[in-house]
Image 1 (spheres, one colour):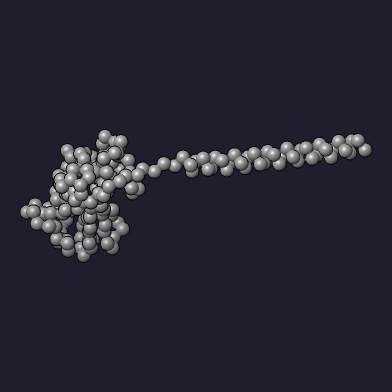
Image 2 (image 1 turned 90 degrees about the vertical axis):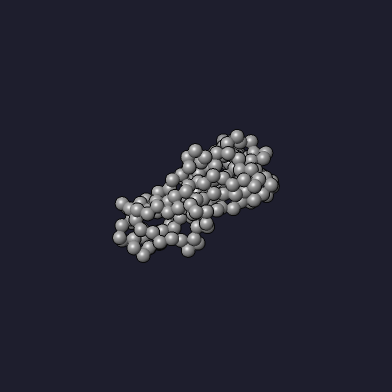
Length: 191
């Protein structure tokens, strides 16, 4: 009788120990999850940043909204600058966004050649960062001034197709941003 009692007691103690281990393992997983979430940090900037992207020809006129007719080998004048329209200084980055309708043979990057101003702009991960802070009312130097249609890539199979080149831009406030350069700046949006 005593051995049956001892066997039941050992079984109960074993079940309690297993239950304690299961509870401990699950509670540690939960604590780790909540700790990870609790350590998430966000960069908050204040102020209102406004800017305008300007696309001009070499003659200073606006680049035609309807585009221009091109043939392979052409060099098209397209001066892209960014003007500050706010009272706060900011860091700036721009990205060329390419497109080709009706073709999957080439990437658009293979069709366009840009004369990037590498003295004032730094390339990283497909973005071009303006080296300095953009001050209120200031306009940046042109990111690029000309676009070459690469003739060896764009052949007669591209007749009737539309090649597009637009510029996307993002800015983050430089005031109260702990960075000393635009590459180190905090708060850049994803993508």
